[in-house]
Image 1 (cartoon, rainbow, N blue to C red):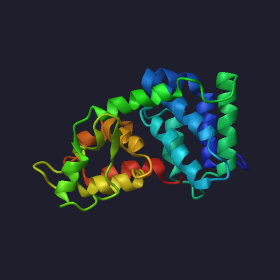
Image 2 (cartoon, rainbow, N blue to C red):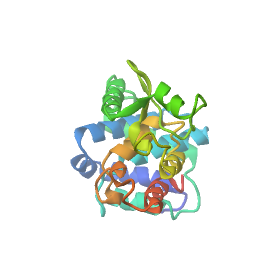
Image 3 (cartoon, rainbow, N blue to C red):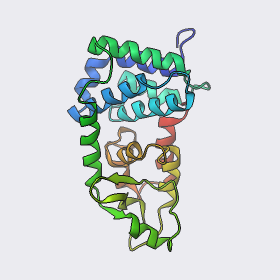
Image 4 (tube, rainbow, N blue to C red):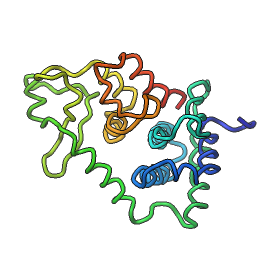
Length: 230
């Protein structure tokens, strides 16, 4: 890193530098979601460090599908080796500068809501339990806050079924641990997308397919590798 540059601004600089290759490696939906998350980061109050960390984490989640060897992926992999966290104001200002060159207009185009809605519709198609079914498993008590809870506009709150052991069992401990790392209580959609989308760090398939086959520490490690250093 150059003097005065932190891990966050370094990653954003590399996104700017390699945007064409990023576009070529991502699907249309993945690329549009990346732009949407960048706009959300640009709109985050620059002095709210916690909000900036979460918004920057959402950007990094969008870059997970990039292949090993890509300069941006290499930068993401190295962020966890950096002792200092990204500085909020430079990250937001760098993002705004990036978007200004990409769009030649202020961020937040009219299709932002449509992009997010398309991602949410995809995630809601995964098998899920209703809020009543989950409460039944806890005998009326509140379920753990680490569980991913998605708000379906037609069916109410839905809990993706992959979080639970088969046959009406309790949640997988590793799922709860990963969800804590991914801040699923604050960003359930981002956490669900991590579990259900392809992940190059784990061989290209979705992490959900590895439950019960990959050691728990490897699943947790993949999540920590993404967010550590934020």
